[in-house]
Length: 128
Image 1 (tube, rainbow, N blue to C red):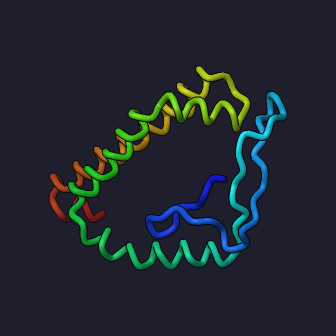
Image 2: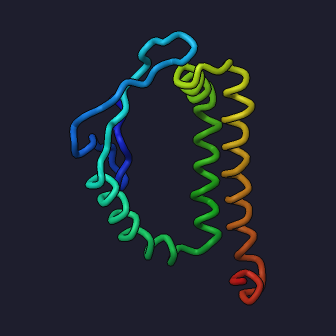
């Protein structure tokens, strides 16, 4: 079963329940997903609130590097991600690669570039 990522750790839902993930093209069950509840939402929000001050204090250029590393991870795992998206969404593999993976990677790269560029702007412009 897939797990949720809360506070940097893969965890099961508080309910311990899950639901099936079907390939809509074949009807086959391809995985299960955790069926979270309000306790899981609260745990995720609490973890995010605790992490935010450190993230905020991290220089923008460093945040850009971290986000850029996320884009690189997408690139490293492109084939596996495309197969996963194809099985859970029933779309053709090429569409998963182009429409989902490439767009996602591009968004991460743009965000990374924007964060890194922000450090090069005068503070009065960067904070607007």
